[in-house]
Image 1 (cartoon, rainbow, N blue to C red):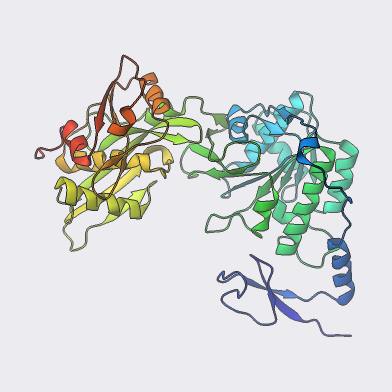
Image 2: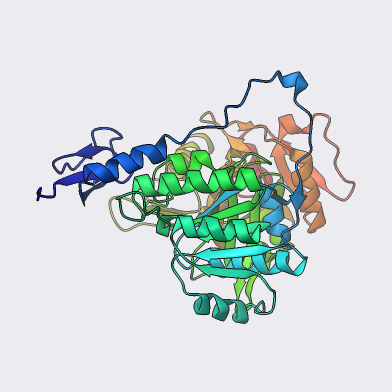
Length: 463
């Protein structure tokens, strides 16, 4: 009997080598080579047959001869999820949902199944991690135990395909794609080849049957979805669940969507009854804001097509050490260092001996440059120990010369500020051209950071 051979396979790209290496020569990833036993020749021939499955022998068609058909969308019964998906669940779509363990992926998708089953659709929840009794316990906690959706505790893809053909579901959840496997392949569940082939099989089933398939994906310690990168390329939409398990808010963000806008954001609150939609996100984020406190300023961020008012907080304190600390939560650390240099050079604030701490309330992350001026105002407010009046909102991009550059969709931001009672706004002067402003709001256009700091009354000495 031939001795079994050991090979090392990269979990990121599938590269194989007979010896262990710290860095994959193919994709350059570190510590991704895993030890596996080499498959016998008979099993390898089975895998080759599996990968060489014939296509449909389709013919090329001119684009103007293709009949135009509108995409059929179904409501999930969860408005925030529909928003992130671009208006609803598209028939025949393949959606990948990723997030940290315990963030609420299975809870949200269980609610999705219950809502669609209540509307008369056939929903199938396939779990390779939990038993049917465990899913029943979660459904009872969510008040969905009588919803009427089907549960299948199975990780064999051939069995899943049979049950799918028997039930013809409208929507199917696969929790999770890393636990599914094809018996024809010798590799273990969760390996690169198994994840790739199972996802390819589910994509074919979704497109042929018109069933909407949601895949749950585990994430690595770096925050990326585990498995080959091709998994994200194969699916129609990639949704990420963000947020700290110690906080009540959860953010659902679309980073890829073939049927709608990317970077859309949905906000949920984790409760004992499951995920509850946060309808007025701006009001929720500002509900616990401290008034008459220095270092706090409000700005309107855009998440996809959604304006959100966020509380930008800064704390500046004189350091007793040689190197001052710079810590930022929700803001890029490099961007913070750049803005501190601009404040010191162009505004005259002495920052070289000050510890600076930045926090975006509610667990939000600000990546757009429109938050630059709000960060500068919050830092100046804390440094001068002067509070910014409650009715002010500040927005603008800051350049290295201290100039304030225009921001996108200023009218939508102004409308959201007016809705929540903010009546004094500081915007880039360039944005005031042909700008329609409500009568209840006073807008001040500034060209430099120094002008904005002076307009907020932060140019004097602290108390």
